[in-house]
Length: 60
Image (cartoon, rainbow, N blue to C red; front, side, top):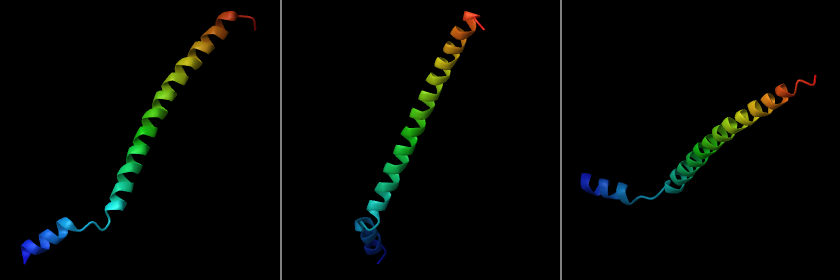
């Protein structure tokens, strides 16, 4: 009885698509977060460089 219950559990594919969607969604969210922080760091560096160039002009 226990062996047949375990065998049925192993071969049951109900809900597998939901698990796939959760894994794919988590991967997309994780990659988006990495991309966001990469762009954020690069934009702060660019902003500091532009601010330094403007400050060196001393025309104001």
